[in-house]
Amino acid sequence: MTASSMPSSMSRRRFLEGAALAAGLVALPAWSSARASALDRLTVWGMPASPSVVLARAVASGALAPLVGEARFDVWRTADQMRAGVVSGEIALFATPTYAAANLFNRGAGVRLVNVITWGLLYVFAGQGVRLERVEDLKGKTLLVGAKNDAPDLLTRFVLKSAGLDPERDVTLSYVGTSAEAVPLLLAGKADAAVLPEPAASAAEIKAKQAGVSVTRALDVTELYAARSGRPAGIPQAGLAVTERFLDAHPELVAALHAASVEAAGWVGDHPKEAAGLIADPLKLPSPIVEASLPRFRLKVASAREAKTDLEAYFEALMTLSPDIVAGHLPEAAFYWGR
Image 1 (spheres, helix red, strand yellow):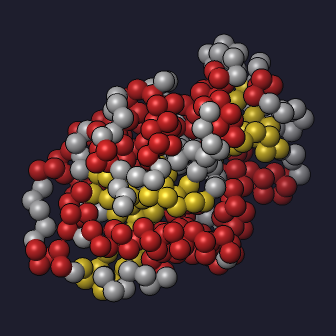
Image 2 (tube, rainbow, N blue to C red):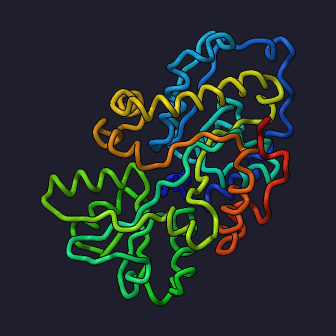
């Protein structure tokens, strides 16, 4: 999302410029003891991508009712909105790309990662008439990619380089603002292939069928990453984060939301149609597209501490191409929530 990576529409430059502002969180006063004892209301914020369905279900299940008078789910739309909400205190529990949470933590912004929700949602699609069976087949081709230096771009270049291809010379990387922008370009034959995360990938398949165009979900970037990195199949791309001041005031609520997320993951797998109905409106996407995307983003909830080894390997892979994506170094142990 880039999520996920952060959604590919996000500008990493603007994100990093604002991180210093986010650091103002550490100067905010602690919550009062009265506020710490109970909450009248709480909004759990998802990101604009399919994995947010887990948090939507966790809230809808009523699991937080013993701790919160009114719990609701919403979706932040842009990285700027998310960052400003964290700074102001409006956003305390929120889904985010894991690298974005690490970046904020390393810049002193008072954010910790609670868990990982999605373990890979990035695919390479071949356009009509394009044969693409392995990474090496991308040589000499034009490949649509989301925002430059965001996670999908870095992962793409990582697997290209691991396969012996020079991303600067062997492949023509054509950058677009968002993954959604890449879909019509691919269907129109403006490029040979496109890197698409879910739910844009499922949208491409559905729209291609409607248009009578043949596109192929040719390569799974998660499998390629595993083959090239030596890690088990799975990229810890996005999860739940929390501000430190909220965690200090309400540790039991954070633990309850994590436990509810574990339960929600199983429910989503067993009830895809109902799950899509929960999230389609907040994501502003047709329910069939959301439902089609649900089996494709490797849903598994693990605490950040449980996933620490995989997270560090992922951050290190990204840092080989862009060290500043997590502010130059791996997060300290305190970043990883878990018991």
